[in-house]
Image (cartoon, rainbow, N blue to C red; front, side, top):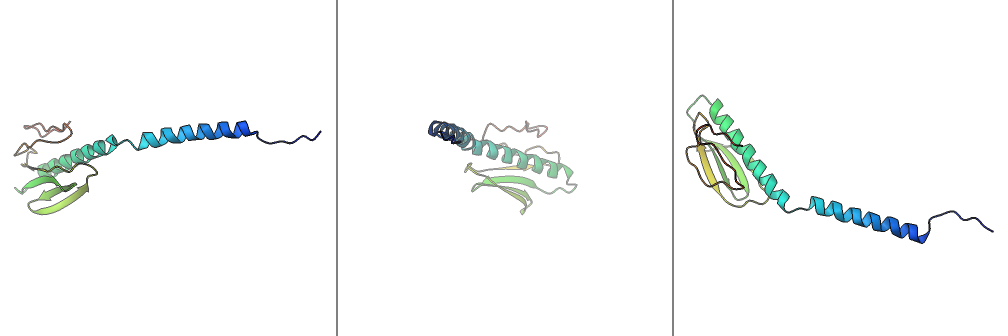
Length: 124
């Protein structure tokens, strides 16, 4: 009798089935279409906060604003672009100007339930 060592066909098929199930779980976890919306909301919040901080730290009476359009966010001082962020999914548009206290001078409708406190400029 010859003793042959190795895996049986059943063991190989079982391992392949487990690997396929794990691959399906991983692909579904990272291909969620809602992720792009969360990333865009976070990007817009970061840009708003940066614009508010720039407006509050600028000693001149320059006009700081943020404009969103064409799947990008632009932070501007007067008419000069200071920073540009790319958005993945959001294709709407809005613009907000801030005074030197960080208060918004206009209140457009913001996406993703983003709110700005009109007195303090706080963004939760």
